[in-house]
Image (cartoon, rainbow, N blue to C red; front, side, top):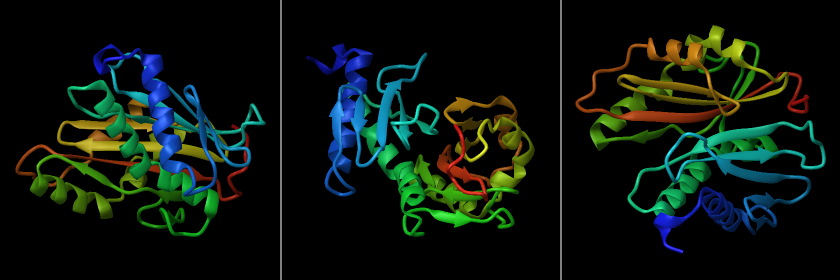
Length: 232
């Protein structure tokens, strides 16, 4: 099948296959079954089309306990640019593996090796929650991207948007946060859903002066101080 003629279902299945291949052996056994991935223990991953978008844009949900229908699913979107659909899917999966998977792996391991941990009182934290913060991925011309990334590494973004962000939480224990910010472009997704008030608050934060357009994004998991095993 030519890349350009891949259905969205086939794109999701391709993403699942690529993720399973990347995870297999390194952290237990993983196998893809269509757009679903069966992991070790009770874990699983689902890949679905990100509705209303072009080819190569998918939503990836990490299922903590596939035997419990009410267990939390940690959603994050994955997308990339490119002329070929397969190349877009490959790059999208690479972005998820680089930016989102380390946070989930840190949640599962608790070792402090894969993602940064912040308490609710930490300058980079969120009041009332423990934070697992993934890598800050920068995009754009190297100099502009580096300047924005350096700024974002120490900017208290979560506390600056805490009021609307906390109102967007719909789980008592685990809430996934995706921040994307650049000049004239700011977006906050909570548990996979775009949140307007939090995005507006993020857009109001002054950015450093950049020579050209650049953007950074980061996936963060807010964990209840009482632990991660709450209801979905």
